[in-house]
Length: 457
Image (tube, rainbow, N blue to C red; front, top):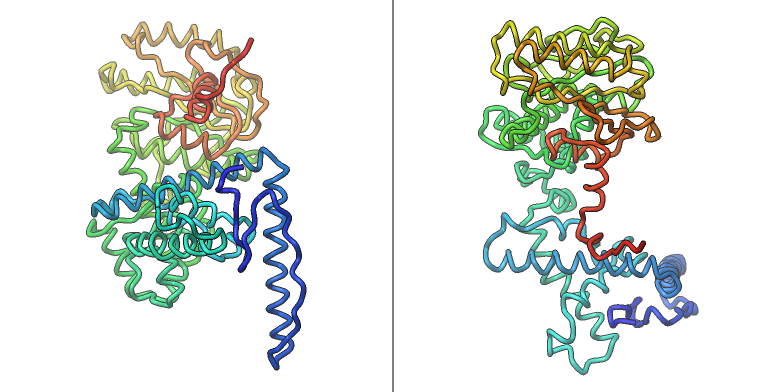
């Protein structure tokens, strides 16, 4: 067992190999007996939680491995951030200090994670001042040092809203430093406690004088806030975060010259509908002319439709109300695309690169005809018009099920993605929509942690 396996609970120090003995009530010397009993109950609960995590750490190798990985990650990130702080490179500081448990918080009490992290940051080997002192004193000192020398200064420079909220300093919150997820959770509170400043901040963002974070939010999460909003300024937050996301993707050159077919039929209710609408609007926003702002309806007689609306809420409502059918005619979809290209005399590089179909159906159910037959006709038509080398690839995304009938990974002209997860959607945005069964698998196993594994045949 490594030294990191030792922990302090209250005034006592334990090893992960040891059992924790339940403390015996010592009786109440305080005149207020109820308060004394409450303190004793809290103490016993604290020891009970520590006992559970220690016992599991001792007997469960999977939990122990996960525990040490989490502890190692926090320790490494916090040490790196402290170096950035010392060199005044504050913009490079991550959010490890935000997500690290606070000393003696409920999470820390139930996991003893802070002590494990502090032992790795302030190890005896690297800090000679801790050599020779007993475990109990060492554990106390490094935990306290983690709080004072690491978490407090890092959280201060991060200007976390929780710090200001906890101190009731609403009028001091730096809104341009609030992370996207925090903005999602706290925007109503900002309006309640600091309406004038927060409203002014939103106006500054709209005018380009300030910025708003959106990086951690996914498209459907932003439009979901529109559905719940009962305040115009709450809607404005979602609108501004959407625009930030669009601008960031445009700067990266993502999803340009793409087109979406959004299924909005009744069976799409729930997450599939939210994702289909959000990605449909997003793809239309990111496309270049003459494709910009347009979608194709999912129906037997598909139409190339201009998304109407002055703001994000109106656009999403328009898409939800588009006509739909039980399936779609892919030949007609490609005819619409080819017609725009021919009439606009577009160069081959201006042709749609990918056609995304967002639905809850399987590919063979969604198409009115066998794909092989459709594709042969499509190739012939595009070739005759001089676009034979730039035929759009279909990316058909079944947002409902993860057991759809797979399209062969190498089948020409189409890639099938089945099921929905946040990671899959992040991959869709990061990889410019270039997702297929093989790419999904390769992305899933490309992490550093998988490189240590060896396949034995």
